[in-house]
Length: 469
Image 1 (tube, rainbow, N blue to C red):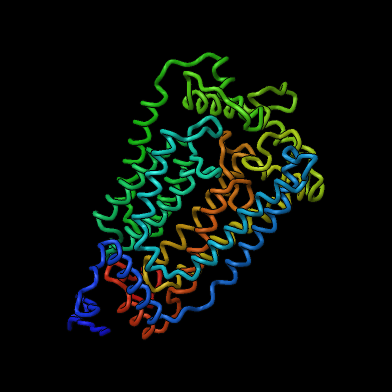
Image 2 (tube, rainbow, N blue to C red):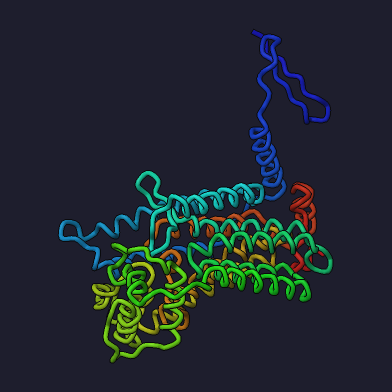
């Protein structure tokens, strides 16, 4: 048997023959995968990977430890006499899978992440649309898909997909004066489309997405005039959605109570009424503006807020100690949407401030790494992931402490919820990938070698790093 190879001089047309017969040509998909792999291989060869950032790793490990302790404390309402560790075991499985995702992504060059941006975005959009058609209800909204016994929430996935896509678009459309018109238009369209689809899955998710996108615009160096136009577009689109969604006849008080039943029953059941989510949003905003008092009678409408306030008051300055929570047994969704109140009850005001500082340290460290990156895409990616994690944490804390109206938003890495843990773990993995493969030294030879190895759409310089200019 003979094995002959015919390689073209350009290196683009590669054909293999066995016994004089040409092998099957590669499909377009295989060709695209091969190109991505080749680009990543060239980039890895040009830039020797360093160790993943140990500060980011340390913060991530701290989140995992806090998650295990506090979820067990907050899950007393789920504990059964047969197995008191069952909630912790289920949560631990997702944490282990999350660690595996982090380890896998930190070894993946950011070139591959850039090439996967549109694929991940389209897949997330498809799942989000599918969840609104055949999804299962969570917190009164049709927002999840059940696959092989596991519930997936595409709304969590789409936020990270938007960060990845915005980083790709912004880095490709850099100009000496900031971001090109084409880049601004593309980013605005992405955010408006994603936000409109997120609307039915939760108003808070849409607001969070817009907040992250605004931060990425500012990090990307968008000109103030263009930034003002983008904000105007956001405002007009949000106003149009509100008119369509909310300009409907008010439902009865009975319907509103039915829409809020899930919170009084810890997520066990809810009945759909004519008011839908619009009635729920308006009711929550109205009750938030009115406020609550410890003397108010406890009913289905204010149960979460009052017991959350009790938990925080019981915590005091130093807390009651992990596992000594009193309110977790009667606070609905204490293990997910209101876990921060249990953390304060266990560790007090000091513990809550330390957790807040831990999230802020994550975005500060990401900013340090981004500042030292020589290329724009890894800088945008690591900052986008960090801002997403921290913004979601801040929104959760603001809801629990009464600064924002009641809404379901998990605390990253700590709340119970498989999809959220996996998505946020992927964000940490992307951050570690950037810290490992992006050139962060001032060595001009390394910077030039990285630029030559990278594809053309990834060669834009990081405007915050003076050594690349």
